[in-house]
Amino acid sequence: MIASPQQDYLTAEAYLEMEENSDVKHEYIDGYIYAMAGALDPHVTIAGNLFALLRNHVRGSGCRVYISDMKARIESLNRFYYPDVMVTCDQRDQETPAYKKYPCLIVEVLSDSTEAFDRGDKFADYQVLESLQEYVLINTKRQRVECFQRNHEGLWVLRSYTSQQEFFRLNSINFEGTIAALYEDVIFEA
Image 1: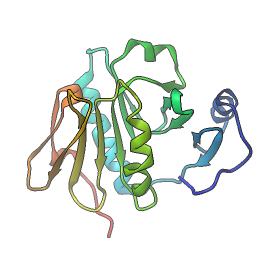
Image 2: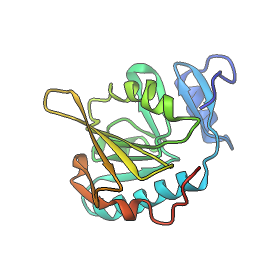
Image 3: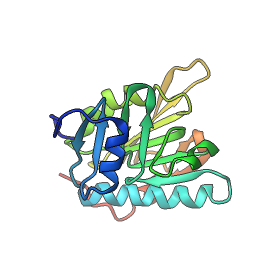
């Protein structure tokens, strides 16, 4: 995400219409759009690996997995973001083909330009989603997965996985995968 908006205020409806015909993806924050930068090979490879693992896992369950081109809408904050990977098991999300409002799992693959925002304001915004049970940050410089899980009291609890563990677990969709499969074919950034 870039630091300053690209134009004057837009309504959510105008944003959705513009985004449908745009060659560049934009995130939307309270009436202003922000162009998204392209991603590097490790980022795309990790997101693709996770998508493939999760798609196979949820097949036939009624849940859907989306990769970077599907928007998450946080209606109460007037926001639209493009998570790297998102899972929704809520049937109401089938009513909105351009965005999803009820994800149970959101994953962001970190990059230098987005890490602070993904850890800070974006995570704070995502926490408003009552359906969200898990927020995951995946590192591109070393094997590290950080799973923030909402507990029964509504508090976010961090569970970290590194190359020291063979498996990582996503409780929101009852998934267990290997760190090796998640990072398959990844050449780490310096």
